[in-house]
Length: 544
Ligand code: FAD
Image (cartoon, rainbow, N blue to C red; front, top):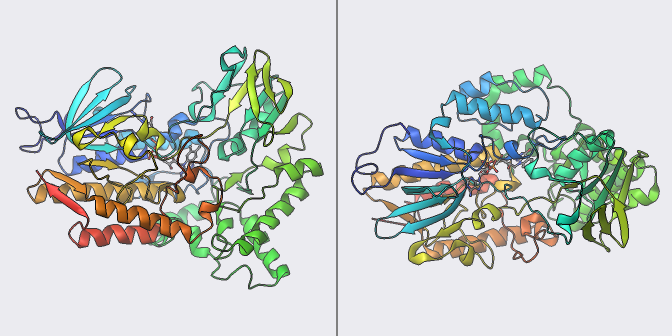
């Protein structure tokens, strides 16, 4: 590891091995490393995968791509970087986003401080020394003053453990841990379990390859068309010419996305039905997540939401030939209460003669068998099974690590009734530990790149502040944390978000406490973070 050492911090005598350990080399860990180097700190990044990219390293399933438009789904901390990189499509495919992450690693010479193929198993705070001791699956122990968890919100695949799992003689795959060499399903009978975002992207492509595709659906999801296409050179020119203003504008929105500035400030109930229909149609034709912003009250008023939901159900009925299949594919839940999906030909795929939809809402997948699986009392013969069963979101990757704070308290225990943080950034009783896009921050409800950058910059400023004050330790007070948790809940309760069984609430993981984890409102959140800093890091205590 090279790079300047901060005096009195690292390297000397019984000092720590480095100033900071960063866990994870996705977009969060990469930028954190860059930022800490700028501060003159020494840092080591530990990454389970064999390269950078995080989400885009692991999720190599067919059809994987971002659903935030490429021109917005990118770093903004370097103007040169955003000028020099060219995206090929409106929504970049996974290989291109991975190539972008690799380009960033090269451009900022990040890899020399990253150890790949190394999983962090434990992190323990040594109160006396004021150091974190980080342990890896390779048996290495590294000490550091600061520990930054850049472990990702959607990086811990939810792999259900069906009875008979080991007896199945065919191949199994999880969308979030896809083989690097790809999979050719030609001539095979394939089963896909799950119909969330990843499944909705993968199903149309698997259906084109497979001899037969059976989709096992527990809950239908709303999908709006992507209308993906080669990136319009005019759009690219416009963005590149106006990036600073556009990025600043996006930061003023609820999701850190420009499209929300197009949110119609009108209630869905204020416009006559035929006009409302035309406005929905306009958004549908435009494509993408902006559909959720068609009217201002879609996520606060059930009746307003019903109008949008019925519009989408009408589309499904129009696209899908078999009325029974269309009915099964039609969600009854609140639209956009669960992450909305952005699709390319998803509903039309169910018109193909080689595709069958199986409803497992009442009779679930019971077991895997040597020949396939048993669900809803029926046997299905399969050559390959794809688990599109999502992630243990937001807390999964953190809870898999034995993180012990002051007095040996285990983070997993502290969070037994649901995650508790201050700003989603720090946890009382766990000094000098930061969680990038942690629970209690806007994270998964936003364009995640600006959320990541905001957190990384806040953390770097915080560390500089602590060092500037001659201190060595910072953590939130239990009262500040308590207040923040209550505030996150109060904001969520003003919306329809907590009313449905989403992974935002942990509802996809059996036994996970039902707590709404992300903070709603990017602009309001950023303002809170800045206000707390202006008031001398209100709610934090410095020490050491
Ligand atoms: P990640 O990219 O998840 O990286 C975390 C890294 O930490 C991983 O590489 C993991 O291996 C590593 N790690 C975790 N635990 C350990 C450990 N114990 N030891 C060592 N390493 C560890 N967001 C959007 O804003 N727009 C989109 O369009 C979008 N599309 C998505 C599509 C898919 C299929 C998925 C799964 C997510 C999508 N997301 C999207 C969310 C996406 O996760 C974020 O945008 C972003 O990539 C997160 O970066 P990160 O660095 O925080 O986390």
